[in-house]
Length: 242
Ligand SMILES: NC(=O)c1ccc[n+]([C@@H]2O[C@H](COP(=O)([O-])OP(=O)(O)OC[C@H]3O[C@@H](n4cnc5c(N)ncnc54)[C@H](OP(=O)(O)O)[C@@H]3O)[C@@H](O)[C@H]2O)c1
Image (cartoon, rainbow, N blue to C red):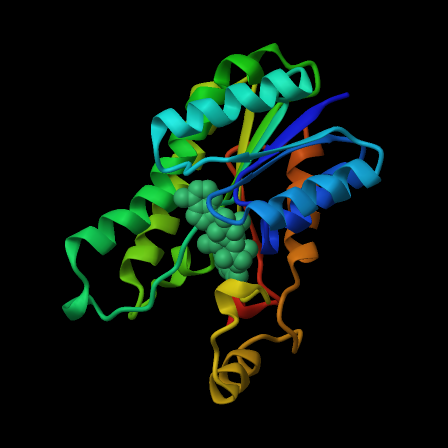
């Protein structure tokens, strides 16, 4: 069976991608940093769908932990054919109040992690016979910027450059693409006030928030799209065209 490694898949968008890949016949390595029980439940849900699963706790901003994650996944599942670099953190702080440690932490978790996991997975991806791919989860804020989360927006912009660079580096064997979601209902966006929600919804032409499954659709597309590399798919209900 082909296998996929999805970082940050104990919750939210990563969880939906893990389950979608299992529905599509993929074995799945579930990764998380702290949510042991939630990750174990996602692995069980993958097994319920008839696929093999392994849950691996690893802080992917740490190169050694990322390498351990990849090797554990490959050992348990017999290889790694697709990587989805989804793990990420957000923080709302004005630039004037933002310290260098917070800036670095967001860059480490959102950008360095993708470099760490992709680099560690390269030998396995090169052995794949499933049209191997890497998909990086960026954000609409990579395009628009974000005044109270400049480090988050910068990290997501860097992911798009990393995506295009890696698409060139690894062609023709491995395709590398990015998804740039708009507002998706997860824990990450769960702290909005009713007024903030009204304002956000008013800017989304399809008049609803994205669901994690909307992003999983895009991840499945990139996994299968053999003639697509170095691209970004904007999944935002039309928000970017305004
Ligand atoms: N939600 C949105 O509106 C939105 C919009 C655009 C882009 N995105 C991006 O989509 C991705 C997923 O977001 P989400 O909303 O699903 O977030 P979420 O609900 O907060 O889930 C984040 C996931 O990442 C994991 N994680 C965080 N730091 C990690 C680390 N250092 N090492 C390994 N795993 C780590 C978490 O593990 P634990 O459970 O163990 O903490 C969790 O599984 C992120 O990259 C985010 O920036 C989200």
